[in-house]
Length: 460
Image (cartoon, rainbow, N blue to C red; front, top):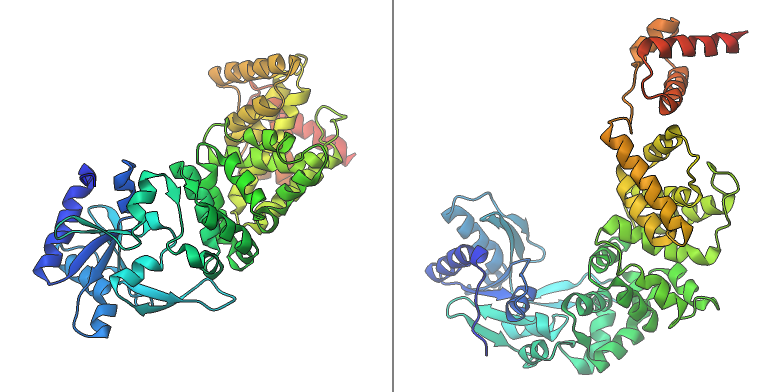
């Protein structure tokens, strides 16, 4: 067995925990993924401490909570956040959020992945975990590794993801079907293969993913999108029938003749892998892949999107809303897709005002929109056009005339027109901004004169 080396940035923290445990007659263990990462020389995260101690069952149930209180008192820390129902506590120590837990076993209802908790022995806790590689404990008293499944260290060495009990693999996934998605994600993150019985059980239990909340599925998708090869996860999800209840639209893409699995479908989503690791950009690419089968028609006017493209954008909004993404995230993602198509119809006869108008529509997502455009629209002469558009944007930016600050405030507009506040103020501001886009040197006096003329003509 290799020597366990605690990373420098955790040594002081773990030493404090170890010493305090010994002083107060507790047995403390590092549990789960942190131990696994030590074996594969991966930067560990999420330090979870299993705490055993106490004479009565109630003492044992509160061992993690009581130990966290002792630790907080000793080092004058903020009070731990307690979750007494689950026998856990969270404590910030050395700027690290650490979870303290008791050894437990779990009981599940048929229609819920939220378990009933009962205090248990250490081995029972190990066997109720998802995969053997996540069921290792590091005893802090003597730095000894405990591998109750007798497969954890071996599976790490062989780069294998295996459930803690292969004979009951299907039950393990049916009890908590989020484990199916975690197995997919961890196989990518760690570059491990999924053991055959485990993979088959994932497939048999895939429909149970319906009982998992959209928020938890969203979080796993986010983690998948930040791996090196997200496309592999979506292809694997397809093969084990998981896409049907997570991204039905992507599943439908595999059913079309053009995008059959193993051909264009795989090639289409592999684009995500070569996209810069930015979650909004990668989500935009994924959503664009999904809506490709709706076959967007060409733009028929340079500055207007065709109706079918707007329908695709609305479809994407519904998908992301269903997965409980924030309004801000949905806005950014759809902005990239919606505005990216403008680059397809860019031409050299665009005025600077049109370039500024395009940049204004993109705003904070301008750089991501240009990246997105290069992925999908930079073919043949379009590549030259997109590069030219980017150069013009950079030039206007260097001259500090890409965006314009408002010339008139709302109060100034009210004073000029001597009218009470209302929707008309927004109309005036928009008109001034429209003129500014073509004439960035517009002065306040010129703006007032032009708008007065426009509004006086409207009143005639």
